[in-house]
Image (cartoon, rainbow, N blue to C red; front, side, top):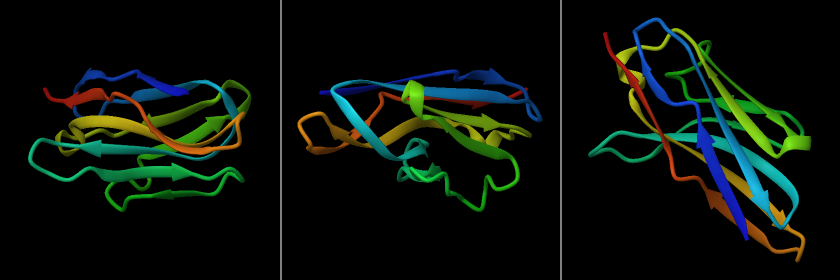
Length: 120
């Protein structure tokens, strides 16, 4: 009922920036928390940043001061602005949204992921 599509990943040099986007579509009534996770092979998926419906945010210590999460409720979209990227940020980035559908059911929806590679 709800699909998430990420975009904006790619190859960037250390110190560079990228902006990820994730758009939700389908039978959406409301979206609560939106979040970005990341995962590298052999490791567990970890939370990078989250933003609640009221706008409160939280970040992993490893990205604080470099990443900024934001949302556009009118567009059902969440963004992740990533600055001062370093090779340790290389990962597959996933967005997740907690969505109330028009049928008033609550879903936790995940995107397919977008690859971010930081390398010279």
